[in-house]
Length: 390
Image (cartoon, one colour):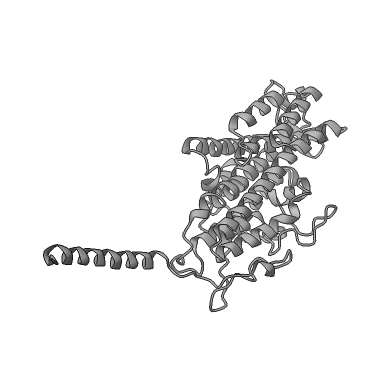
């Protein structure tokens, strides 16, 4: 006999659950933002912005924040060079302000197409993304190290008219070194390449950033947060619409600085594949193809790490082949900065201890550069080569 007191409420319960489940699914699985892109349309010369447009034909790419940080790095680096270029005593406070974008520190630099007012008003800075994949303690330690180096750079710049010797800061050829023979400007630049560019691109934007929303637009913008994360990574790598366009192993086809230049110089097997990987990854975001997106992100991260490690080994080799103290000091300055930056190579599972042990063995002695030997250089090179399977 049919028992309505039991069956009917049960039926209603099931009906309500089905309706609720359908509504929940509908609200969660929003329609794709974009029309899918055929991967076959991507070429090595396709400008980065050209295919990524919305239904109205407006670009969904905004490289502004990435490019502004890139230019802030350029401006800080240009200022470091003023010690030798302009025989100028530098100002540590100004360097710190450029690092934090405080106090309107940036001025026009015509040769780099930099407008100071644009960078001052950009709302972005370098300090808060430096070593940002690390713990708060470790990140602050790296940031404090850089700020201490700005003070060191100021002190070294006062010796620009002195000839450097063991224990005496000054110029070696055209290079400015501290009392241990270390080119402070190179250490700053290379630490920023690792702690800022490598870490933020490879360990934040192309790892954590891949889990960002791709179903809705950022308020007031034409892009999703995932799209913007990927675009910011590209904008911090290069200012060019096609990275390394027209490059060959012998000739770099575009003007590049920092990591973008060293990828070409020290990763001959991979440099031509970086731009296509960025392009395909961006198309994968449009297509909601998470598997392809992660594949391209991992490739980019791996190739950038290879470039950093190969640069470290390459400059150690240049120390051995150089014939003057000036050339050797310049080579080891670049090498030391890249060795410090190895700690951000997470694909290769390198930690700070690996970098610090090599640095200590190279220049931890009283006289630093002046105490270097072939044995010290060989040990460092062998350790890095083994770790990265170069």
